[in-house]
Amino acid sequence: MPNRKQRRRRDKSFRHEYETVLLDDEGNERPLTELREERERQRAEKKPAKATAKGGAAAPRAKHEPPPPTWRRAFKRGGMMGGVIVIAFVFILHGGSTAGRAAIAVIYGFAFIPLTYWVDRLAYRSHHKRLARIEAKKN
Image 1: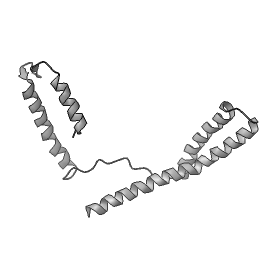
Image 2: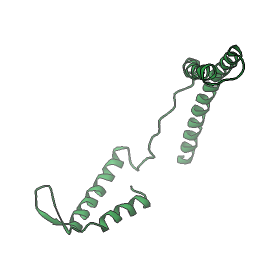
Image 3: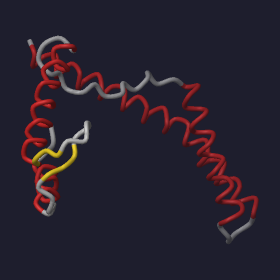
Image 4: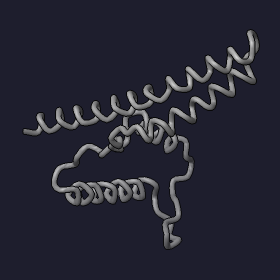
């Protein structure tokens, strides 16, 4: 269902149309008001069918469930981000010795591995807490 802002924008676009008739699919001239009413009727007919297909009342849209956190994925993501940090520290940033910058970059790179695991775990747990809260409200 369009929100208020979308409805206002749509109404505004219809306000500035100067044609009072449009051609339908068969090429017949029909008044704009009739075409709008028909479109709205078709939309209204489609909505209940869509809701009943899901099993009754319209359920909230299912969001992407985050996968459980794994160290393998954390090593992949953290390794990629660590590689970017190493390149940035060694080649882009200037100041100090190259060996010192490389050592700091490697430390930061390794720090990204547990950080990415922690972020994945946080997302996974919060998603399941939210689902539990929704289930508790239903019951």
